[in-house]
Length: 301
Picture 1 (cartoon, rainbow, N blue to C red):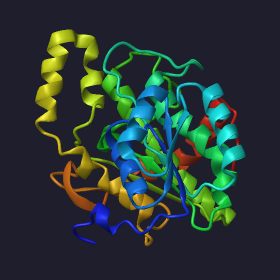
Picture 2 (picture 1 turned 180 degrees about the horizontal axis):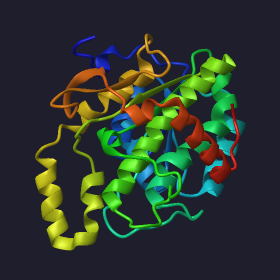
Picture 3 (picture 1 turned 60 degrees about the vertical axis):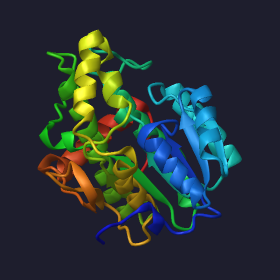
């Protein structure tokens, strides 16, 4: 389907969509388009003031709820409150993420912060909401990958990168884990006969606020590097299209992965993206799933 745009999103009236990290960047564009097409959108954000401002900008049928993916207590509280108010959820877009290029940091639960936020937080959230998703007529989960997953490797003896920490490699590892999770989730949903579809997307090189934040630790030099890096990126409205297609295209199948078509999947129109060999390996998926259940205490499928 060449030239897929947000205008192809079907009517979303009557659907409830949860978008993590919806107050800025890709999440804001995704939430805006879902609301524009009629969905009731839950903006799941760490900063509720920023979420309220995003809700004002979006308009439409939206609500703001606090979610800190770096805290399993916050994930559990969010999921419980959401399920109580919305027993049926049609769409979960696991969009939120952090990019940290400075010193190693840890989450509230002691996980390396990028791995804990980008993968484990979403793993727990998805598992806790799976019942509300399965109650919907055409439920879907979308996991946000990155082209960095293709050069990453999961070291199961040091998932939290406690030895010889390298921030950029840790980010890639977190996104590989997210990708493995989305594919393994599809395998398990199919095996269980679940109606929930697990799809994936990545934005290529897209202009968001994550790059400037990633370089904050370098001061003035970091700001210069961030500005130069943004010159090679595409607009956030274009970068959000792969995840919007994964979230709304009626023909999407479980396990499909969307990204940009041009320049080694860095920019351009939406097409099917390629998984790395490790991301597609069922043995890696099974091993990561077991580790994630143990680390989060969330067991499903």
